[in-house]
Image (cartoon, rainbow, N blue to C red; front, top):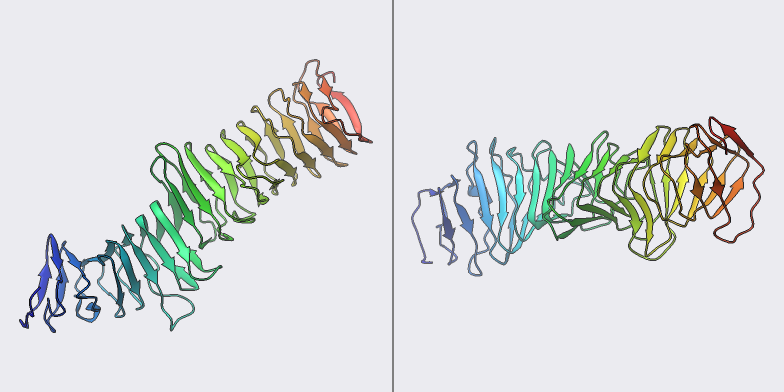
Length: 389
């Protein structure tokens, strides 16, 4: 905390070096990070990044300690890492090239390279882990390596700011809630979520990653807007997909979890691609009224205990039952599309359209319609198939 005037370097190998005065580490000399933490204070929010060592494998551990600190000089340690600690905000404005990863453990790490609209604050290959703090994107676009969120959030300065990673892994702790507002991008890049208990992650960016979306048991992926899952992303929901009143288009749906809406409204989940999948979980209304729109030429098999009462619209392809159904959904089967009872009796709200109803499995099957008290016309074909309908 004194007015130090030594001119040699400063090496932080362990523990915490608290800068309790403006000249705590003098005005010259290289600052080397060997495992310890450099901690700022109300008396010292100076930018020392121009003096940070560029030697290999530097562990830049910075504790802003409730202050706002900016590092304007690029950190260039090969294999080096940056860990943001403490409350307050650390802002990076240089074109950093350290490759050992970025960890946001507390407070806010802001990426803001004002001179570059493409966003080059972090190395394109460096992993990013948000573990208790907030990653804030002022950059319009930022390309990184693998992105992991275990606690905290990813926010943006402007809607549409994009984070492109090589993978997205969400593994929050039980009983916690988190949010991601950035647009998550990447051709073929997948998003995977899991939790040891129950946790919720809200996605609100118009994400464009095209790989699969996997919702692990115990995890809820909650929509914060319409269109936050790419239309080309195949969703496996072993946890909960919460539409939260928003309609959503995905490639396909499989898994054994739950699809619902925790908010009032009439959201529609559209399945758009041509693959054939089975969903053995439950589609239910929640606080809203959920509908299913089955597009594409594939077969979508429902083998769980569904209770949603919105419409089930099948303009193409086939809906097949893999279990008896008693939900009062209004089926509309277009010409050329099929409702395959699959050997199971079903009670539905109503039946309309010009398609086909059949059973490709043996047995005597009864389709009971009219539970929603609506008047409909079905001009298609009801035929036995392998069973007697």
